[in-house]
Length: 146
Figure 1 (cartoon, helix red, strand yellow):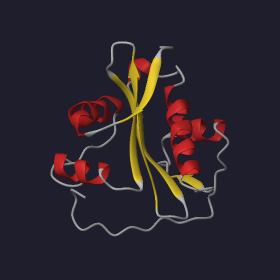
Figure 2 (tube, rainbow, N blue to C red):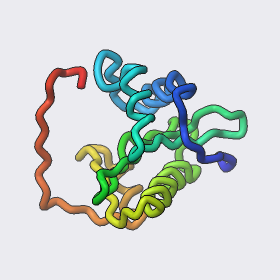
Figure 3 (cartoon, rainbow, N blue to C red):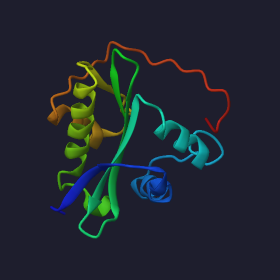
Figure 4 (spheres, one colour):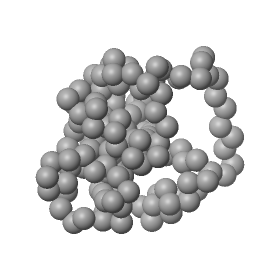
């Protein structure tokens, strides 16, 4: 795939986004953080953006979530449809995140990548990100659906 357009996603894109996550193998929590209402609320946050890559037919081929808290930017849930991989979509989505964060005055960008997701690790390294194994990730989950 060589033709695609990066644009901000809206609530109209919810079903296509969930379908993309499933196709790309990302977990989906339909009773928790990924309900339509939860995603729409997140899309409405001023310090958060959902970007999508549309193919020549207008279908969602890739997507990413980017946000910040005023100090550090975070790239989350980067997904590309399997048939559209290796065409520059993931890199273009990362660049869209970086551009938006730069416009927000954010100069530090981070991404959490699961340890067994080697393709994503290689992507971020190819985009100039440094791996930092000195950090330990802690979390507290209210329920399995979160």
